[in-house]
Length: 65
Image (cartoon, rainbow, N blue to C red; front, side, top):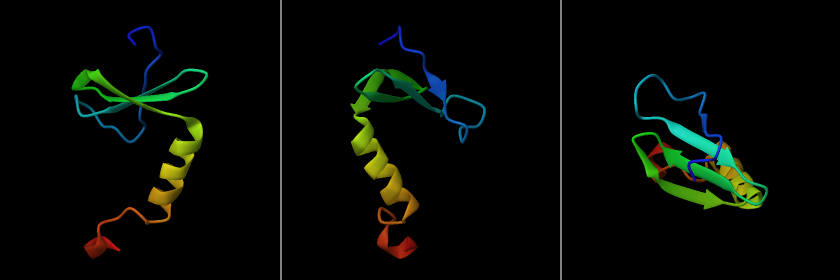
């Protein structure tokens, strides 16, 4: 996975607690900058569903809704 072009999230500040993203033709890869050897992957439709759920507040803890 080291050959991927990793991008830093615009919401990440300075330091090592950053979310990095990369893409292949079939997958979206995610990792934290402080543990770059741990890589999660998903496909674009699943990622799109996750982002929509987060934006709609469907994944917030009950006390935060």
